[in-house]
Image (cartoon, rainbow, N blue to C red; front, side):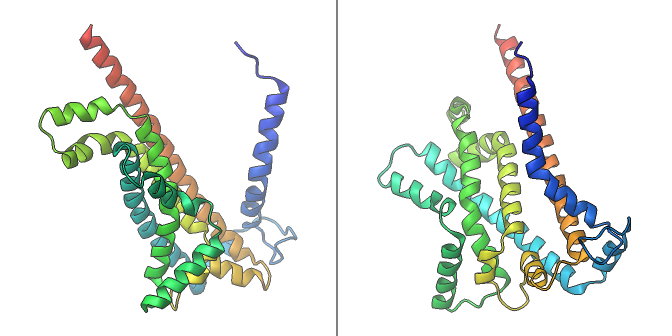
Amino acid sequence: MRRFSWFNATSIALGFAFLYIPILLLVIYSFNESRLVTVWGGWSTKWYASMLQNEQLLTAAWVTLRVAFVSSTLAVILGTLAAVVLVRAGRFPGRTLFSGLIFAPLVMPEVITGLSLLLLFVAVGFARGFWTVVIAHATFSMCFAAVVVQARLYDFDKSVEEAAMDLGATPVRTFMQVTLPIIAPSVISAWLLAFTLSLDDLVIASFTTGPGATTLPMRIYSQVRLGVTPEINAISTVMIGFVTIGVLIASYATKRSSARRERDLRTAEAGGT
C-alpha cells in the first residue's frame, strides 16, 4: 500500500488553506461586534438581525435566488439536450461547428458575452429586467451543464437503451424512463453548478439587468465601493450556507446513485451465473 507522505499532506493542507481561509475569515467577521470589519470587537449576531431589516439587501438576494433557480433550470434542460445530441447522434454534418458553438461560452470573456447580449436585447426591443438576466445566465451556464452531462453520457452503457427500444419503447420514452434516471446525479450536479455560477455572476448581470432586477453581487459591489459593512459579511455567509447545503445534497445523491448502480450490477451478475 502506498504511504501517505508528508509532502502529500502538506500539499493538501496548503491547497485547502489557500481556498478556504479567506472564506473562513469572512464567516468569522460576520459575527464581529465592531462596525469596522477589520477590527475584531467580540462575538455578536447583531449584523444578522440588521441584515434582516435591510430591505435593499433582502430584495437583491431574493432576485438573485429567483434568477439562479430559473436560469439554472433552463440551462440544464438545454445543456442536457445538447449533450444527448453530441453523444448519441454520432457523426452528422456540422457536428464540429455545433460542438464549438455549444462550448464557446466556456472561453468567452464575460464582458464580451454581456455586451453582445445587451446589443441583442436593444436590437429586438426587449425591455431589460428579470427575464433578460435569466436568459443571459442560462446562455453562459448552459455550456457548463452540457460538459457535466456529456461526461456521464460517455460513461453510460448504451446497451441498456438499446434493450429498452428492442422491447418497443420509443426514443423519447427510453430517454425519460431509462436514460434520465441513470444520469440524474450528473443532471443535479449540472444544475447546482449553473445555480452557483448564476449566484456569483456580476459582469453579465450588470450589462443585462434593468429596473427592479438588481442582483445581490451588484448590490454588494455598489456598497463595497463605499466600504465593506458587516451586513455584507452576514448575507455572504448565508449565501455560502445555501451553496454548501446544495453541494452536500448533490454529493449524497451521487453517492446513493453509485451504490444503487453497483448493487444492481451485482444482482444482475448473480442472476446470470
